[in-house]
Length: 496
Image (cartoon, rainbow, N blue to C red; front, side):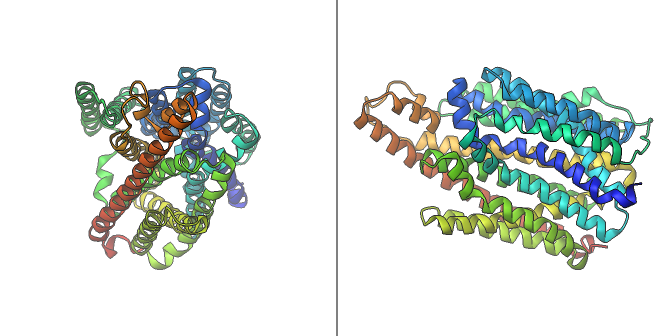
């Protein structure tokens, strides 16, 4: 059945992929409203964002093994109802703690489905050119969803409450489920593949520890003891995970795959692009609303060129890959992304049209980068490890998102906190130094003149943080460009 329905199957799996990826970034626009309604702290803000990608990244290697063991279709359709139920719980969470718990539940369903989406695409498209185009479309949806998240969040918040950013998942998942059961071809899994629960917990605890340490260091009154303890614990669990995988007969992650230059290059591209895109989107959405005083809808419209360009560029890159090779497309996409971010940096105080043009260039580069990374990862590995390889790719994207929020978000917090200088007696306590959200909340309860000065100083400090994040993202892309230029030689990226 599937040769005639392969494009319908692609539509099914990519529609679900859209929901999975968009839940990483859709909260950025909604964060100010969530923090206000749930009276969340700065720590709550971190975990509301990071709980989802962290748990997904921790579970994906094991989910990839389960996908190979049980069959990609079976795991995919099992994750859909769980994803829908968790979305419902998140939408109606009355406290920040319950919202974080719902995001963890949501991540379990997403981790079950995500490796299967790309593995299914690889199985049903046997023609090389069709497969390249299909992966390009898959990457277009992934990159477009990541970039579209804040835009969709802004549109929904203009007319509904913040819970709507989760609730939209429910009807889509329920509509997709029967079509998935009917149209996706069944492939028998390899029952000899074993699921490693201990390994899954090791990598998840390791990532949580490292992320907590990095976030703690961004605070103005950081506890060096807490940061060091978390870093040691995280590094210990990650070390145990690597050693366990190296000894395992059937590892969750086969580290020998990284000997292939095309595969390892694709993983690096996925992580770096995830860091840069997520960090830039996080700080951009905050600036549009909290510094430029735009409504969620206006912020969404301003950011629209970013996802539009990503969606257009990703399938175009899939068409160009067989003709020009992976290396040429990768290098070009990095150069375009770097040009876009530098343009955002230079034009940040210019007119809206100039800024939107810079976002369009940035989005185009990232869209092409997503396709190039996906192709390099999937087509430089054996087909019998499709689930594992798809999981490694998905972990790379999710890990990039987590690091983007943690590292670039940490730079944003640190530059804001250390750059904010308030006159003595203007505010009581140090809450205003934690985030611009806190400063604006404090200003709302002050007299007009004092509030005006607090807002002006806080917004100026955040602008410095905004520029620091864009500059850091540009430096990261430039260094990676230089490294890949040497690592990805033409022999590894001929497209053959």
